[in-house]
Amino acid sequence: VQLQASGGGLVQAGGSLRLSCAASGRTFSDYAVGWFRQAPGKEREFVAGITWSGSGTNYAGSVKGRFTISRDNAKNTVHLQMNSLKPEDTAVYYCAANGEAPGVLRRYIRGFHYWGQGTQVTVSS
Image (cartoon, rainbow, N blue to C red; front, side):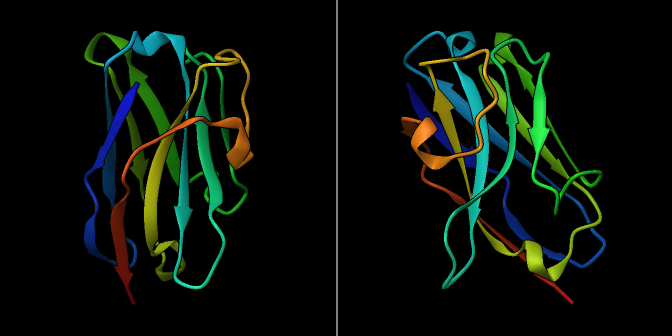
């Protein structure tokens, strides 16, 4: 499966952005999807995940209550709605797919085998 992340940009603190991850090449509902982010000089970290059906989601503690992950399998798309953005949310955001265990919510990078190219999110103070 090929993944394409989009929707990043520059926003002021307190603002919102909606990221999208579009999939092609395989049946999208065969995959759980995760969002990760990487800030300059820092390791890539888990942000949010969703199971193949959308019935299960999980979030990093730092974004819980502010970010919402959702998916539309008919449109082969996963979204990450980001509200109340903070400067510390600034990073390149990546979407990733796990076809090995699509009903399982994973948080670790090695649990995802397919990655998109990333989209930059910059939050100004």
